[in-house]
Amino acid sequence: MTATDERRTSLQLLVIVIGTLIAAVDTTIVILALPVMRTNLHVGFSAVVWVVLGYLLVITLLATQVGRLGDMFGRVRMYEAGFLVFIVGSALCALSWNEASIVAFRILQGVGGAFISANSGAVIADIFPKERRGRAYGFTAIGWNIGAVLGILAGGALITLLSWRWIFWINVPIGGAALILSLYVLDARAERQPRRLDVLGMLLLGAGLMSILWGLVQMTSVPFSATLAAYLAAGVLMLVAFTLVEARTADPMIHLDLFKVPTLTPSFSASFFQALANFAVLFLITMYLQGVRQLTPLDAALWLVPGYILGSIMAPWSGRLADRLSPAVPATVGLGIQCIALILYAGLGLASPLWTVSAVSMVNGLGSAGFFPSNNAAVMKASPAGSFGVASGLLRTISNLGMVLSFSMALVVAANAINRQLAFAIFVGSARLSVATGAAFLHGIHVAFYTAVGALVVAAVMSALRGHPGRQTGARHSEARG
Image (cartoon, rainbow, N blue to C red; front, top):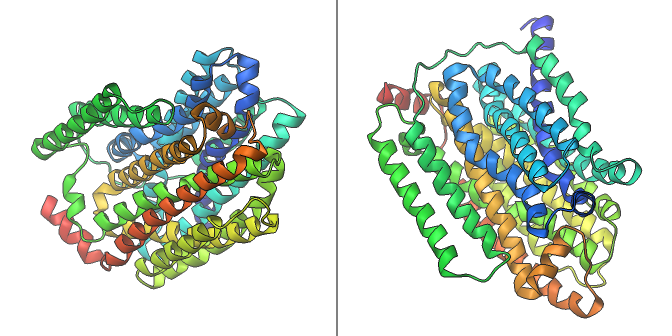
């Protein structure tokens, strides 16, 4: 490869990393702004929670669908379209005037985020050969970690010094620069797949997931009832119907035979259980630092920065190991390290030194760095060449579903320890725990961490059970489908 080619490839990777970064920023930055947004826009209590959940849910629902669009119309074009929609959605969020507008524009922003996140892994698979993808995914992990840190720190600074609207305005110049750079350096080199959209499948999948997630989210704020049971049951039935339709459709949205590839099913399962366990960690620690320890949002964030920094540094090394060894090795070791971190978090008390939080966050960051690039590499290495977009979108959907359930799990445990409304208020930063309720709420946090450890153990078992992906696996599977 010439120096010019190497420079172009580096710029292409930079575009992907920026996309990952801004998606991560908007996963965390809004949390700090919720109390101010609620007051400024006169938003109801349940609606302000949907400012966060709406963004995450729409990405969950659309990830597989837009990944398929990338296979059909070009992954690079869909990736660039994602930037454009994300920029427009961010600007509209900054201009929001009431609760309906902020939730609606966050959903639009999530559509752009779905196009970016669902196609980013597949674009990397198009650009890099198999032996270099692990390192590339390692750099995207850097982008995610830096974005998560920036979301916390920049959010606190912008809200304090300027206005909550600037947490959305900041996306416009960053996203615009990334869009211009992507138009210049990204090539639509992948062969497009002449397929039709599976409209019925998309409707069943979207409706099924929405029904289940709506029911689960409602369970965090109201007691379980026949209505909630109906939502969950209807969602399950629609997903069963979706599976039956996909099995009988000539050109389905999701090729269910992807799950027959030895590496893919355990890789997808590991991603789900890891997200189920780990996405709640940030919120649980935030509740501990802001609620139990009475820290400000910005002060609480500063104690968590070392973990994200270490994760960013170590992720490329993990990616290199995934390139040289079986991806199962660094991924499984990373999950084991995260188990240790969550057990240590569960030992935090009312008077634990705050440096302990930073130390444990570094352990958790090291574990994350071991898992994410390796698991992504495993999925892409095992996926048939013509289904990178579908596989990447499905991986993101499964991970996002785990994240949403993790979010719900954290709130349910907190609500079981104290009043549900107070738990919600603490969660979004609009109220703090008193000394009297601190011990009870801390017990709920401990239970949540131990529950998360159980999910991580399942993820580690899934990761260790997967085979050694190779070119022959994907080739044989592709031939079988042809």
